[in-house]
Length: 390
Image (tube, rainbow, N blue to C red; front, side):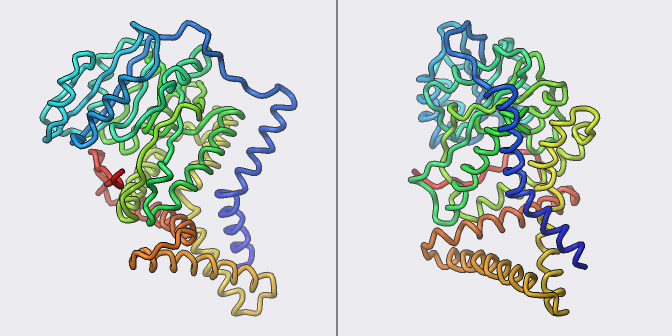
């Protein structure tokens, strides 16, 4: 029982903190031998680029998105913009159509984001494709900062950074901003060591020649598209200075809906990307993939529960002071998470408690997502989480 307890505790620690420590040490070792990876400069010949934006019923924000898109910097004659509004039943297509410099692709049938993206890709012949969401806003230099990395022929995809607007964070999802800051740090180190393991749909890009259509029922298309490129032996680079800003989820219920969908898609991806689990194919990528993604999306949430149960049983059998201290720490942590949940239901603002609450919510979402995936009840169609108003 003690062996399983320590093993469970170690995997939980490694998943959320230990990997970050090991990753940083490996980055320092790499720097000592090869120096720090430097991004290519902006004084180069940039590739042709197409910006693809999938929008579903976004009339409340679409003109603001278009204005943001048209102010992006990129060499004249090398940028094309496509908005795909399949299935939108509001004025989104009509508003996009007002701008002749933008190509509008619209069908009344709602067949899911991934099929909309595939349809757009049939019209793309540029060297690089950038995907971004309709409810995010890019910094002016984002496309230049992303495109510069393709000067390195080993780079097959580039992921930008997701930023949660801090002044608009909802009380229920205060932990979201903290989580993304930590994730951003891990992605910087992942990228410097070798490759990011997956790109975020808010802002990512691929070489057009390496793009492979994924299955129509794919739930997390951004992750699958980027990792299919990593499977081909190319790096996914992280560019934190190219960022997409968005509002936080309206409340914890909406954030949970989004997390459950991602978790279901994570399980689907693991089952479909089995080659990445083979350390003989690409050892370093496999190490990063298992450490940063697979553990989070599979066993770790269940091991958290197992560690607590085993800790209680060991203490009941007079396991010793160290086990009592560890149990007290777990009880305090989960107590804070519970307090965060209670206060959230009462709409009381104590943001410090939402960090443990958000952490526990994320791990619950993984378990719920796994269950939903194996029940076959997770749709690949757009399922937007409501965002807090600006």
